[in-house]
Length: 169
Image (cartoon, rainbow, N blue to C red):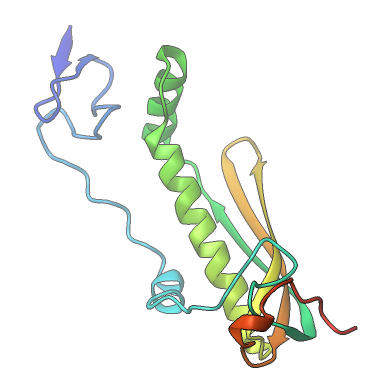
């Protein structure tokens, strides 16, 4: 015997008590989104801004000195409903929105961690940013960012902004 989701009209087999597509239970109750850990809510809101670049320079700016290497990591846990939905999407084709959102969230958290670390070192910017994605234990995703925290000199006049500046070492 099967049941139809009251929210999205997806048909499910009887052994499943919630919709794989939207998470709604058979009785029509929709799950609340999981709360964000308080450390993320407090540490990353509002977002701290700092110029960041994957290149070894910032156009129009001169790097005065290198402050140090900075890192940010985020490990995202698995969600059985999202994983099941993603596996169905993989079988029938299409994009997995749940995983894409998880990647975006992980990257945002890792970026904020890296920026907070750079600010603690007194940096004005982070250059040479590298983003890495890894799976841990087959069910967890790790997003890692690394970069070089630098101090900048004041902005250059527009006419002298012709080539990228390299740091003094």
